[in-house]
Length: 300
Image (tube, rainbow, N blue to C red; front, side):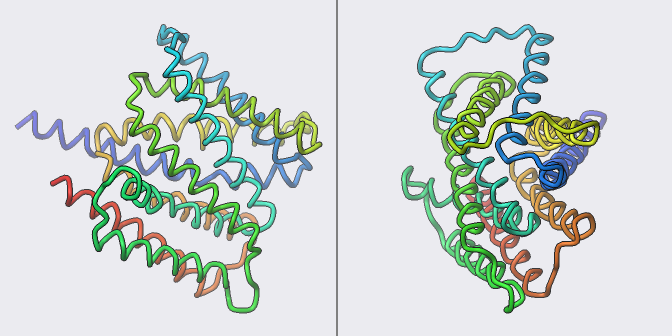
């Protein structure tokens, strides 16, 4: 009896971790838009976010007494993951400059559907009718978000940037799944974060926007926020959520990410919210839920 109760307690703890992780990741627009208002460039914001997160991850590895040694194959995979995550983060943060962050974060949530499609096209996973309906719902949801209230159309550049961000992250997930590298999540993210920080340096050089120091206490606060809350905290809590609540439950709880971003956009930054936007958000969330439910049923 005690054993069953213990399992229930661990599952409940995992669900709490999943909820908090999703909410943490959904606060990305809060830090990004505040720093943009302070005059920081996209490259600078992401450089400090990744750089500080990398320092924190380095300290974690030090306390865990983990070696940084990796094989040549593992290094190639880690470099690929770093490139994919850099592209995904950069395109998402660039989209925040041309469209409402809440809408952008919702469109980003199409990545589970994209992941299912990639696995079906390139790894011969079965593409059933549930996934087909999910794809249709996600496209319809994005179309409704694009049209907005029928009067103001979202910039196509912003939508394209978010879809590229979602695609990059979907490929990132597939690579992690298929590469089967035997490294801890902490070591993987140590190298990924380092690649992302270096990638932001390269982007800033090519874009002609130099890396600038945050201005004062407020800017440093939001830099630390981005490095710890939507990065380190979300990452660590997701590990526990997947371990104790299961990957399916964790994926469902991930719907709180775009909802958090939408609420922050409305109540903090005064972003508009219409009935058509609400319908678009619901359709995208429904498409993801169908994919997750279909995968869970296939495993059973």
